[in-house]
Image (cartoon, rainbow, N blue to C red; front, side, top):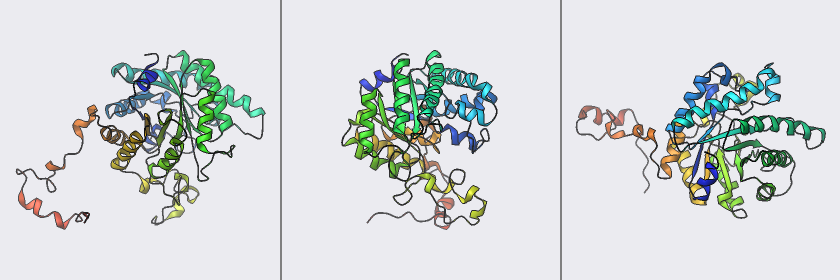
Length: 360
């Protein structure tokens, strides 16, 4: 399996990154919003394995060990720091089970924003480095093919992660989180320039993940692709309808919410985002546009479910196992066209559904 990612990319193949585990596990009742610590890896590993399986059946090429926020800072916060190494090693072991059942999938280790790095405090560089060394070191020992380092908003922190990966001898796929400002928190240059710096430092792929949905992620990618080889760019967007006025999901405001005081802090983010969910068709179109732009590594982040990944795979011409159950509305009892359906149900359609708007 060694070098599987690089071989796929060298062959010009697209690699679909299915994740979004954090929000999905919270929705299923196995992870607490707020701390967002992946305790489920230890408490219910069978649930994690099943979610990996669902993403792969729907077309994910990547099985990413569920170690996002499985680092020392988060585990200390909930009083389970003593389980740090076990959680990281177990997460890779669970992911490997699914990879072993599905030849052609790729096992990835994961790390993320440390929440400890402060560009104004040089002492925090050592703290961040130690945290990366722990997670990346354990993943390397467990035999992952490459590392995903995601949701970084500081270029300085990214450089540390790249150096640790280089020393570990593992390829790195790096994702920057771009908030409302449209910039990194410690760098005044363009995002394309930040991407070039990371590639020069040794990252294998670099781009953007989290915070932005398709509508506000694509402009960043198009801008970066004007200065960076698109084949060296990557992205996995949140499955939420961000807009030019509300470009990141932390900024989304639900004006139709009848009792906004019920939302924690009065904010839709992170547990009141349901009204902004992207459809499978929007995520499929995002994959198509990424592919046409020349990206070879793309997928979904927070809010993404297996059905989104299936739509993304199908949008670039693939037929994953779960395509057997892709929608076939010809069989719907009322909306269908199959002549075996009862006519009185089909004739009743105007009474319970809107007439679709048609161009022209």
